[in-house]
Image 1 (cartoon, rainbow, N blue to C red):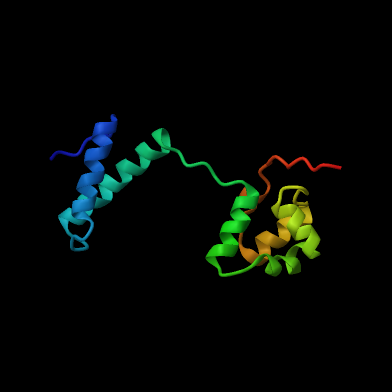
Image 2: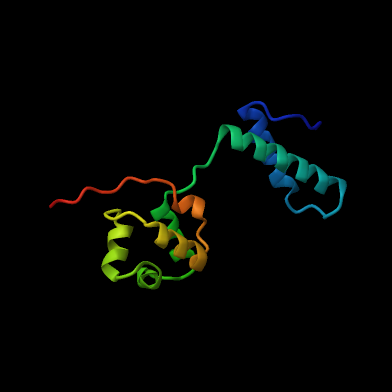
Length: 125
């Protein structure tokens, strides 16, 4: 099969099938070069036609906790009190700039995700 730009969904599906077949090829071979080129073409197509949105800040925090085996209690050292942690994770209280900095520096959560606006839940008063 000749390599060409991925222009249609059918081209995309065919490229994915070929990538799957080439996945275990010998490194530094002509087939590994083909795999690299196909993966690059697929990535370009996906960025344009199947973009993945960044998660909101709270989803990112929860993901980082889960993937690192941490609990909400571990956030107290970076956020403040247990009540503040609960209010933030329940989207009842926004992240402050100081908290964003600490989560970025100590947990490695990208600042560009933490600073994205997100809707707060309305609380009944």
